[in-house]
Structure formats: structure tokens, C-alpha cells
Amino acid sequence: MPWSPSQHRLFAAAAHNPEIARRKGISQSDARRMMKEGVKKSYGGLAQYADGGEVDEDSPWARRAGAAALGGAGVLAALARLSPRRFNALARPIQRALTRPVVSTEAVSSKPLSDLQSDARYAMARMNADYPFRDIPATKGQGAWMGESGMELNPLYMQELPRGFAPISKREDALKYAAQLGQNLDQFAVPVNRAIPGLRNTPEGSNALILKDVPRGTLAKLAQEMGPDVVVSHRPNGDALLFSIGDKPMDIRDLAAKAAASLPSAKSRFAVSDPGIDRVLLGREPWMDRTYQSLDVPGATNEYRMIEDLLLRGRPSRLRKNPVFDLYGPERQLPD
Image (tube, rainbow, N blue to C red; front, side, top):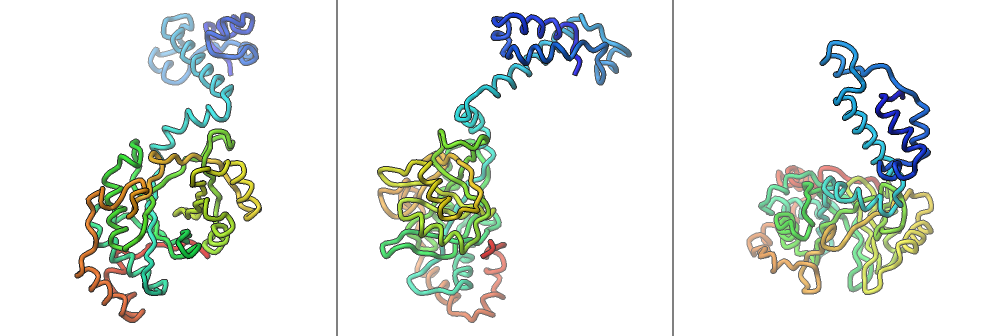
């Protein structure tokens, strides 16, 4: 595009003097290219309407506009020169604020439950978690949890919580809601997490991996093949979040290679999911990030358990007609 005379003079100076180019934050090759685009004769748009005609390109307004345009070009050029790791780190705070954390719960019981009974149990727990978050729609996916007897595969219920700038560990309202779900469902642990995908898909600076469009059955297979030291978490949009845990976390490149061997056709993206900032594990044990007790969340009462038991004894046809199921059961289900 053509430039104003003042901009053209700056580009010419930057093209011939490395020091000027460095000060203005623009490469000499970019300056030479923009210098060759020439000088435009007048400003259009709002400037024409304001002045009733052509603008004096050497006026203070035109000089300020030229400096602003050059500054913007300099910023873009500087961003383009950043390494992928630094570029991702620069964008991450904004991405974090725009990424919704996910609270994931299972509805397993000491007794075997059908899928419908799990849905009903989750619906009752959600209805009795007296927080505004309970009205957020839930998605049913595949859960994979390494228990004492090996990998446990159960229905997983996911809700996307509101966005926020604060680390997840500081969001007491969200943590209390998740803990109340865990208490109502009598679950060993409940995770709240999010993942920030890299704008540039590079392993440098990453500690998590996102696999795109992973069906429920495929996620179960993936979790079993990744082993006990890798968390494989379904997401409401059908993706899978993977990250390594333990005293010696797996290198992200090794994790990506292992995932690719398990699901060669899946598209992947490196991401960041930092403990405390992006993920918190709530539960019963002191080694977890937060315990139900530390959040002062009460367990379910005997009356609650008695009503739950009566609900689960009902016939499937009655369960489906129960208003609790209609109001708080999962609104959608990911494909198998």
C-alpha cells in the first residue's frame, strides 16, 4: 500500500541505516519493501470527512498517524521474530483468561450401575450442589481413572465453568462447587482443569497435549495404553487432554510420541496446563491440592443417601420421567 511522505522518509532512513531500523523495531528488509510501495496522495476515510477534502500530509496529524503506522508495523515485525516458545508465552495470559475451566466428575457407586442410573445419580448430585454453576449444561464423555485395582472406565460428566483471570487454585467458588459434587457423589477425587494450546505448535515450554476429536471408546483405549503416569481427560468438545504426573513427569516429546503411536490419525497440539494455575485436584486425601474438608464442604446426609437409593431402585422408564433427571441430567453425550 502507498504511504504518507513522512512514513516514506522513515522507511527510507530505516532501509539505509541499521541503527534507525533497530530503534524503530523494524527489519531493514521490511523497511525497503514498504519504501518501494511509494507515497500516497491523500488520506481517505474519516480524515477526508473531518477536513472536507485532502489532508496535508506534513501536518502534525499526518505525522502522528505515520508514526503510529510505523509503530504497528514494528510490533508485528518484532512478534514475527520471536521464538515459538516466547511467542506462546506472550499470548498465554490472554488465552488463559478466555479459556473455561472444566469440572469433571464420575458417578460410580459401590454397586454396579447402568448408564441411566449413573445419569440419574449425577443429576441428583448436581441439583443438590447449591451453586449457580449447577445450571451450566453438562456433557457426558468417557472417564478413565487409575484406581487400586487398575484402570477404571466410567461415564464422565463435564461442565465448562465461567472464564476468569485468577488461577484456578484461587477460585474458591468453583472449587467449592466441584467439591460439593464430589461429596454428593462420594467420589475419591474431582479435577478442575483447563489447557492453553500453543498458538505455535511447538513442544518447547509445553507440558500437556491436546488430541482432537477423540470418541469415547477410543479414549478408553488411549488411557489404557498411556499407562498410570499419564492423565487422559475427555473434554466437552470431544478433545482429549493429556499430561504426565508423578515425581518424574514424562518429557512432552515422549508423551506426544507415545500418543501418536496409540492414535496415529489423531491431530495433536502442544499445550500448557500448569498445576495450581490451570489444574487443581480436589478430594479426600491430604496429598491432593485441596481436600473437601479444607474447603469446608459437607458430605451428603443420611437423608440424601436414602432418597438417592430410592431413586436408583426405580425402573428405567420412571427414571427417564423423573423431573430431576430432566433438569440436571447430562444435556448432551459425546459419540462412541
